[in-house]
Image (cartoon, rainbow, N blue to C red; front, top):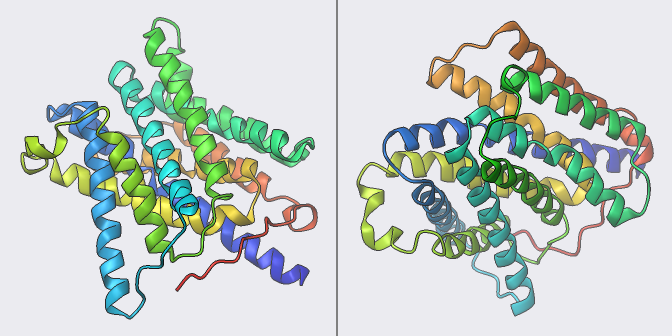
Length: 312
């Protein structure tokens, strides 16, 4: 039984790690969308609505295979929609901060979720974090400073509002990762993801109410929205939904730190932005932090118990 549990945790950790890495395309796509003249509000709405459409397609494929929509109670549906609101809030805070700050500064502030997740875990479990968890978060934070290039510029002289919203994006992201593991409902992963993204799409109308009638998605926004909807919502929401119920909140945020190394690789390939020795050292530190977080995991952490689910 213990071996089976350890195997489940390893798979869950890999799912969260890959889900975090999927986020890596967001910064490059967001930067490119800004350069093409789109506002941060349009970028947020485009990502949310495209992700809902992609999950809708997944539902149609599921229905064609004989697995229909499962009726949920109002409470379960509301939980998923609320999770979508939180996901949208993270994007709003992050992209707004990115519109005021250099990308590397915004990313560094977002990555504060690596230790905020540990705080949430301590509050939830009322136990001190393991030494490996604390060490992992510290190593990842140090690696983030070097990998993002903030070690050159520091944070002084930047927009105070941008710094505040950047930090709040880290808080929101940590909450999303923590709650993803606690919101479990009796439906398929495709239906779960659709409801989460539907909630995110509805929330996005609060900051970009004219997104649909303006037709901006057909005016050059579609490619950015497609990539960001796929890698910034669909795949992470799906993978976090699978993995986070089996691991602690602090570990989930540490594993999701794969976002920055993946983002740097995407930027290097898509934008031709080279990585210097210090940036490579930062990447290595982040990956080392992820490895440290797994030290002794099989002996000291029990997986969260899932509520009974029918994942048709």
